[in-house]
Image 1 (cartoon, rainbow, N blue to C red):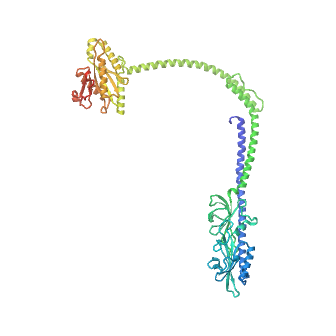
Image 2: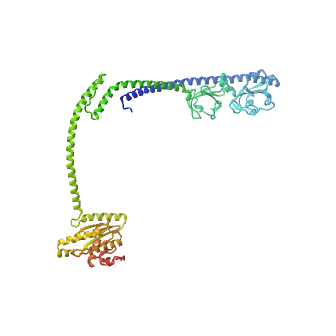
Image 3: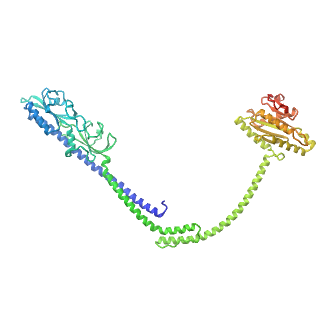
Length: 583
């Protein structure tokens, strides 16, 4: 796909431009992010300081109002106090309750007559005001909980308490003036002239008490009582992870102290999600990427046109080269005009192809001559290989075959017996080993000559091979002895098979009557080697000879050598069906 020069140049231009754009985008994004964070930090700090100042000033102003009212109106009657309270509530809508108590804590006058006649002697604000002016921290309504509507955030109403003692003309304590400032006042301070608590640009304002508990949070924002560690709220702004797991740019400003009474240790915390704070930087990055992408597209188009102009001569050269590759040796590389590089390249290639064509023709002639010689030599080697393979086959045959009978010779007999003994030891399948010997063979040689003896051996070999099963092995073990190996054959089956072999030899028609004796062993694990098995078969064969020849004797592995005569079983043609023990 990108193998052509034109494509490579175009893609290279595009990647280069995109790389530059990416570097610029990363750099500008970093700078824009840093500037955005710095700007948003200033905004958060400014908003926090402004809110903290207004809250501190508001608390101090409310405290002064209560103190002034307590000093200036100390001589009023309860009914006059009630009218004053209701007028004050109309101008101070966040004064949820204003009341006057006597020196024992019984409410003698109150706005809307709430709690009139009831005692507030156990309330903290009353107890504290007995000693002097008092301002209390935010707390939920207790006695007024069922009389006032819920706060703007749907939570039960909460108040900030202000109280001041009243003194009579004699200077003695005559009562306590108390005011419950609805905590929605703080929410209105934060809303400011807008009159809305909806966050501007995602900036949210919290107020924490001196223990870090959130005493005011934005409407609709659900957080824990301690949404952020108080220790993390250092002066200035920082990126903090809040209890919802999100990262926020956070600024903390402690309320300035306007006096010991109203210094509650509150902290105004302003926060903005990091994603929102970085939106200007992200917009700048996206704009950079868009401009860079368009630039890369235009650069790619320009590179495509330039590459096409440069690659045109190369295409002509490539077309001529393909014809040469296809075998059109009369083709020549064209001599092109254009830039110096193109002219030099076409001239050099033109001369080079002429030289290569001549060499190609000479090489073709040499290859044809070489191929002919290789073919002749290959034919000679093939004939020699066939002759060698035939000679090896003959050698193998001579090495493992008996020349007189055509049966496997003693070497092959030993190999087969060894392999079958190993398989017998591994699988536990029965194995019968038989040695057959032509009876009175020496007399045949002496009376009829060695030629007649050879004929007898060949006839016996043919008879044995024809009467055995396809899975049995028959070989000439030496002289007039033959070895028969019968895999997976029990003693009873081996007896029947040996009798068949004996009767087949006895029934042969020839110039010289022939019989054979057979020694049979069925090896078990007690035979440690093929030699042991052959020794047992040889002993059984000896017994067959001793008992009159032309018979089959079985070697009993449990009978000692000294009890040979009593340890062999012999049978002739009448004993084929007998399966009794011959031990």
